[in-house]
Amino acid sequence: SAILALEGVLKQFSGTTTPAVDRVTLTLNQGDLLSFLGPSGCGKTTLLRLIAGFEEPVEGVIEIAGRKVAGLGHWVPPERRGVGMVFQDYALFPHLTVAQNIAFGLTKTIKKLPKAAKKRVEEVLYLVGLQGLNLRYPHQLSGGQQQRVALARALAPHPKLVLLDEPLSNLDAQVRLRLRQELREILKAAGTSAVFVTHDQEEALSISDEVAVMCGGRLEQLGTPEEIYQKPASRFVAEFVTHANFIPAQRRKEVWETEVGSFKLDRANWKGLDNGRMPDRADLMIRQEDLILRPDEGGNATVRDRQFLGREHRYCLETPSGRELIARTTAEETLSVGTQVQISVAEQGLQLFPQL
Ligand code: ADP
Ligand code: MG
Image (cartoon, rainbow, N blue to C red; front, side, top):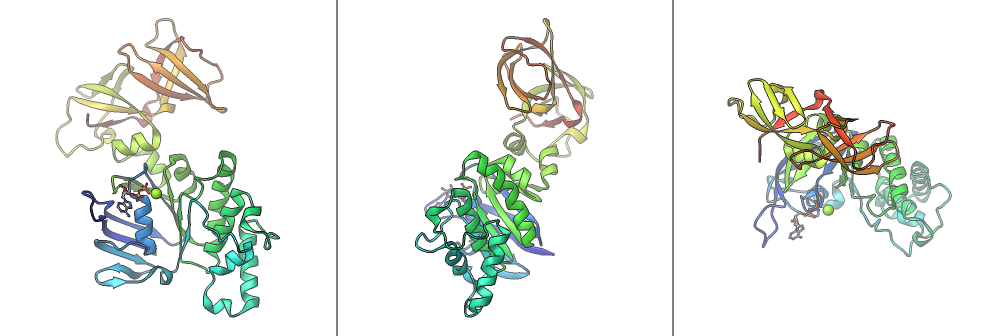
């Protein structure tokens, strides 16, 4: 069943000309982890704050666990929505110990039972891997540990839903990677549903059951990480999520001709065709990992730049028309800058989009 349901949720701030959140409709299943993914300013935080109850929608309905909390004359204040929050900057009380910070979030009922409260604090500390640090103060902890305390505090009262706004953004790269994986494990172990805000597509794809890609306040696509990656619903999603290449293509019957080859493609490979006839021109999406490079004196591209990324190389290529293409390849052979290469294309992932 749905733990969260948004129906046509709209928020426009006074003094602005466009909505910050523009009629967003989606549902989240019990126990699932959903990411809001999009560039800065696309409305992720505003949508999270609407769910939490820190903002009121102008239009639309919000339901949490089957109960209307906003819209159609309903209003449930934040503290009564059964929602836990985790922020980018941890927001711990500096003068309280770890245990006191966590106990702060517990309900009045359990706070009256010191034994039960202490037990719950121990449980969530164990859950986030910080057992034994009860008496530390926030300044005595690393950034990653502080964010675990914030997570423990959010989880302590058994919320129905945890909302996390860019929780990993303030951590350095190594800690961020480790906590990313642990965050998913902790939330799953707690059995809590969660909404996770990020502008980092790799983070969203790796951590989530469902990804909501946002642009300009609108929901561009909702799907599993695999669906978002393999079947982007719009050019924006393809560009933002996969950093795919786009190359002009011209149709001759069923064959689309480009600078890097000709491909037989049909309607199944087309996005945004309004049931009309196939146009003669389109932009062909080719993913970075679908370009195959072979050194060739008479090849159709030149290596202009090369980055070593550990498991793979990222090559910046220039075509004869001066177009830039990015390729990622795990090939063992390293192509040095200036090498002429013949590009071929793995065809299974190709998609056509209307030209801009
Ligand atoms: P994100 O979290 O995706 O970066 P936000 O939800 O913070 O985006 O912002 C979405 C849009 O709403 C932005 O254009 C931002 O400037 C605007 N906005 C956010 N909060 C307010 C506010 N309190 N008053 C006016 N405009 C706001
Ligand atoms: Mg934000």
